[in-house]
Length: 422
Image (cartoon, rainbow, N blue to C red; front, side, top):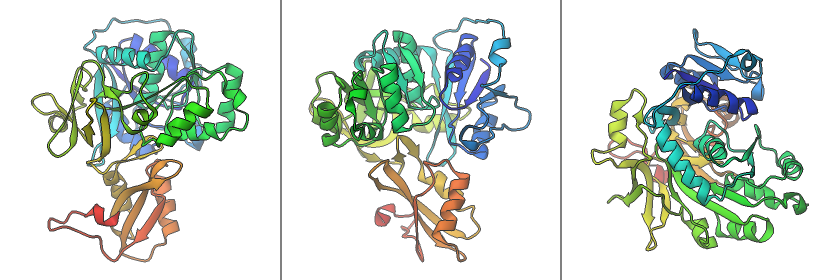
């Protein structure tokens, strides 16, 4: 039941230490490597972890924890000095707490148990065509559900070889695919865009299975992946930290279905659309609740067990889910969820900012990026404010552009009318 945070990039040590923790009956708390010390420190403190595992110097950052919390460098020899230790767990015991920002901007820790995770990712592995002996190049970060569960857990379930990648560089990845004869390569749509630009496609010849999601996928991209790359299967789906997999595409789905829908509900999962268009989810995969937040849990999961996702969508005649937008104004930057309320909170800390509103705008490479609208108190340049943001926020959160307005469009209750900003 002891909790340990891992604030580190993908590596062999990231796999060994957390799964050693789980073997010993502990609870894993992954932390986003893009978080700055204050962002990570809040999660570490609220999780009441017994230690934080880091990789010192990654991305030029000296990973530190709040005073009193031991920090262990994964690249040190600490793993070599321990003795084997195992403790049996029940399926209902909490396995991990993965934090996701809420509309209030304060991250919330979604608790999942062992039974949920094993059942859910057994199905994922089957539909994704992950096989024993596959060589799985893992680009998705392990602090994210996609990397941790669809990456590591499924590899253990199937007996696949794991090859961790800490930072995506297309040339290095292509060389790895060729040298290591990679067969399995999930990732966001940006990954497949990059592979399509590779001049020598023979280096990609071993690739068999791909999985994507987390952003809108053009039909033409899916068609090009099938026509120009060696993938035999390409799966997509819809999920969220609070529920894991919700829907997945099926073998044989058309290019258009893979591109424009998120597939059908997983076994044991119900999906329905509320009157206002919100996607509701119920089933074994819904989280056990938010850590130390009964009010937030009650707000997210209604008395009938339906999780209110905050996403807007519809079900077509074949039962496939189509996601239309985000009720909570969240936008997705290269596969990472960005929450305007949190970004606005940081902007308002700047002494020259009186009001701020953030929206997601289209971006060819990342799907969406943040754009801020600011009412200034005193003179400040766009460049100065952008630099200020990048110093305080993870890169995917920091706005890419800022427009200055004399006033923000507000409704009668004082809320910003973001549809007018778009």
